[in-house]
Image (tube, rainbow, N blue to C red; front, side, top):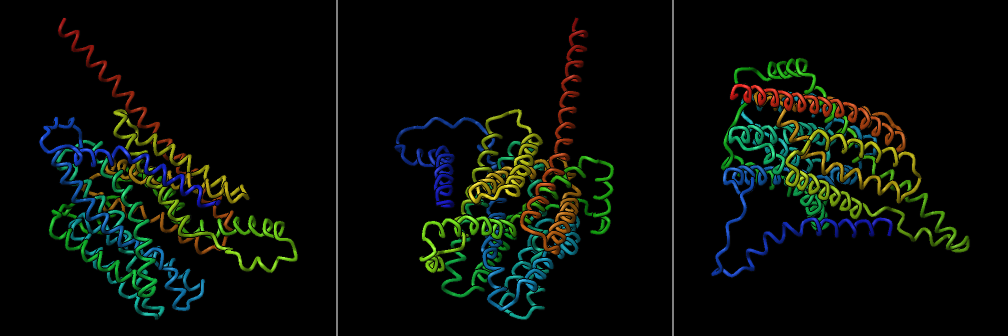
Length: 478
């Protein structure tokens, strides 16, 4: 009941939020073909250029994240199945994040010089190899797989966005259209996460725990074929080497403190998010056991205490995960609706509210001993995640220089991965980790607050300048 009722309510909310979208698809099908229909009102979505760009990006990106989601539920389970203890599994996870910080940063930055399309094909090959080595039980082979996976992760979360931002800039579409694409990408990412979890579970049940990785490899091959056939190549600064590209990106960040603030916001939020993926299971389990065992003892009595062993003492992981994905869908829909309904939409303000919400969620989870309160706090955090990803992508695409985008996005991921590695290495309690996540969110709030104030100052300056220019024009007319 603790987990099922929120999930049902969340599912109902998702359906209600998407009724307008469903009706826009179904109503034309129900109309008679002989009845002439009036042309739809013009909008950014009616642009053929916009639709082509959106379709190209979403198909490739969603195939790539589907391949990632297919693996997710069975990485830890496979290592356990192979007989590795928790300590060795921790080393494998740390190797993945360290690889992303060290090797992934350099390799992803090559996209500006050698092409974003080429690097995405490298991503497909690298991640496919990472899946295939899961067939080997040797620790060294599994370690190689984690290193390859870390490199692929850096490419996935920097080069795809760099390709889209460059194509968007070349087509001269509005920033609003870019926000719409990122919003849809985040929504369908959440949908596919739920579906991929069910598919990988069924696949593992019938064919073994390594089967989801084989299925992921097939999806990655399809992704490579699609990108190779339908994507055009684009570049950043082709005149510089990868090392120089990273140096130039670092120099640009030093010259423009705003870019450093954006990087800090990303590092703080996403390091807390990645830590959360390791945190929610043990923390909810801890609160669940503190709730269920006393209640069971009271209701059954000492004479029936033996029946306690027959009760399910584990939280329903699948239901909780699906609830979190539903919350991310709600968050992405809130962002998309905000963009479409508000012409004066401020991405910086939305990010500030999102970070405050995340900070409060972790504070509540750390201070409360109630399972219900902690679960609801995490649900709110997941809604914040659904808003955060399209918002930060939009902010980066409008502020980060196009010729250095892949290199700069790679640099942004370095402190993120380092923070996660440090948190994983030190054996802190669940509450302590929760407090650390709240502190990281607090630092993000400060950085994003500064960005928002800078944006307000610039908008006020623009208004004053436009009024002065208007007064000069009126005087010239007189």
